[in-house]
Image 1 (cartoon, rainbow, N blue to C red):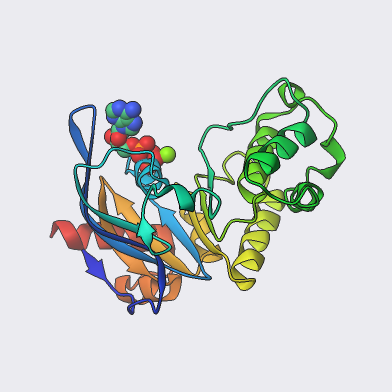
Image 2: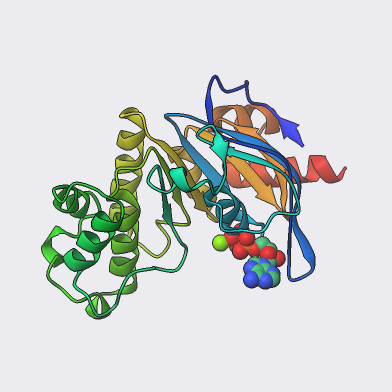
Length: 245
Ligand SMILES: Nc1ncnc2c1ncn2[C@@H]1O[C@H](COP(=O)(O)OP(=O)(O)O)[C@@H](O)[C@H]1O
Ligand SMILES: [Mg+2]
C-alpha cells in the first residue's frame, strides 16, 4: 500500500489488520487505515472492491476474521456507539407504507433525537416538499434521500454513508456534497463511499480501495501529486499499475 497521508491527529476510525471473509472468500485483506475527525473522507473504488463490507465492519454488523476496529475510541459495534454513528445503507432502508415524515419521526424516536431535527434534515436532503408523501410513491432518488435523512436525524458524530449520491441529478449531488462539507465544518466526521472518481474532489481525504486492498490514501492534491496525473481516474489507474509493477 502507498500511504501518502500524514498521520491524523485524532482519528474517529482506526482499522488495523482487518480481514473479512464473505461467502468463503477473503474480501478485505490486512486492511489498515484511519479516518480523521471533522473531515469528509471519500471511500472510493470500483463495484465489488469492498466499500460496503468495510462500512458494515465500521458500524459493527459484519463478522470479522481478524483485526481491530476502533470507532470514536470504542470497539466497533459497542452498543453506546449506536446513537453516535449514523449509517446509510446502499439500498434505501425506510418503511414504504409510512410517509417521509412518519419515517423520520420513527427514527428520531428510536435514536432519542429532538423532533425538531426532522424538519431540519428534510431541508438538508431537499425533501421538505414531500414530507407527507408515502415512501412507496417516491422515485428511487427521493427514497435514497429519505434514507440519508434517517442517518442524519439522530445528529450523530460520525456519518457512514454508502453511495449516498448514486442516481441523483448533478445539482442535487452538488448540494449534498456541500451539506456534507458543512457537517464536517461543524465538527462531524463523514465517511462517504462512491464508485465514481468524480466525487473525489468533494472530499478532504481519500481512501482508494481495489479488490479489498488500499491502493492509496491522501488528499486529492497529494494523490494527484504522487501519481503525476491531474485526472483522478487516471491517477487511480496509475497507482494500481505502480502496485502491480
Ligand atoms: N452477502 C455476501 N456474500 C458473499 N459475498 C459477498 C456478499 N456481499 C458482498 N460479497 C462480495 O464481497 C466483495 C465486496 O463487496 P462489497 O463490499 O459489496 O463491495 P462494494 O461495496 O465496493 O461494491 C465482492 O466480491 C462481493 O461479491
Ligand atoms: Mg457497495
